[in-house]
Length: 278
Image (cartoon, rainbow, N blue to C red; front, side, top):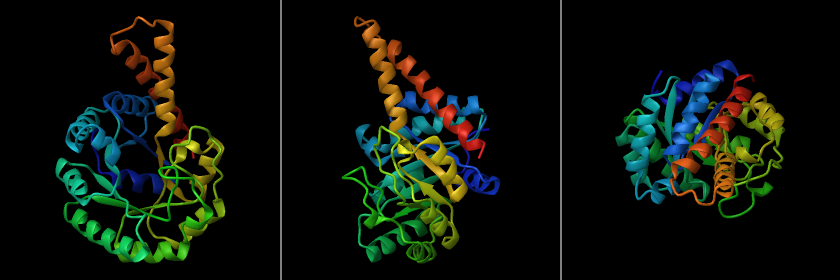
């Protein structure tokens, strides 16, 4: 039980017909909380580091090495993944650091440019034994609200995955990033249609905005990797606020970061238990 390849965890989840929880790390407290939640649920997990988070820390290496070290000490299988990378140099750095997978996000480019750039990155990553996720369509919430017009087309998704050689596909089916309430409306028929057309596992981004019963239906409809970030950040921030409001004179960060870490652990364990039971 230690650091394992992302593709291995995804394949196991696909074979079992369950979802695989993938949670975004912002700092060390997130990483240790996510692993503690996975240990509590006795189930594998993916630690994800976004390009934005790497830049926040001044580079990928500091937060990446912390996540890798946390994964290696875990009592359950843990994978480490680079999320929403648009810079090929950061993708190469992740491969060199020992990440098991990367998500190369060229979804903002025109289709032909997305395909060409993603195929090039995928070939390089596969040479390093690294699993690749890509995105087709556009999951909103980073620069605006998700709109039906940019949802993933099943036939296009089939052609795209075959041409690029990617190992998994993030699809736009009704979620948005950065949602803090569970009001997303998923298109389950579209999920099923993409699942039938595409030979690789599907990834649901923006899952913080999806109600629990809808996440279960999404897994049953064909989703495997379930990405969650904003919900954990909300729980973390709420716990910090509660602790500081209880004792405004607190100055030791451990006294408010500790409860925040514990809150994230509870949320991760709850998500993973639900996904495990699918």
